[in-house]
Amino acid sequence: MRIRTIVAATCAAFSMAGPIRAHDNEAETVARKLDEAIPNIPGKSLVAVEVDYAPGAASPPHTHAKSAFIYAYVISGAIESKVNEGEKHIYRAGEGWSEPPGATHSISRNASKTKRAKLLAVFVLDTNDSPLTIPVK
Image (cartoon, rainbow, N blue to C red):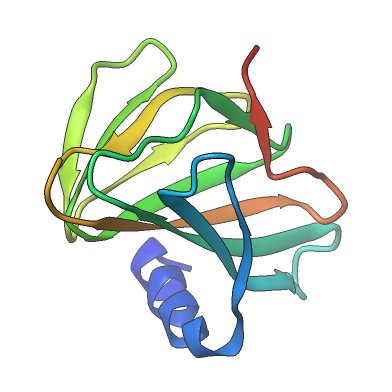
């Protein structure tokens, strides 16, 4: 299945779910939008979360569930991101990137000090692998 198809299906499911939590920084809100077992891949699930950043807001450095392969897609605004030893990059609405299992996401923030930014993170992971996000200490 193509990533665009997954993103489109996930976006269609947005109206079915509400916020799950906000990080310690109230300027960042994370809402679970989809959580489904993948029927033709036993033991795997597809989880999608929407991250909404206020102007200038950032996520603390983090990793994700050990088995998670992630595709992140910028819905609106611009997101500055750095994964593992890669370069810092600013992704704008309509652009995205992937994160391999075990990656460290050292930078994830709104690139604007004046406008909101929103991204969709789509996880393919072992069904019982949690939590989705683990702070780096």
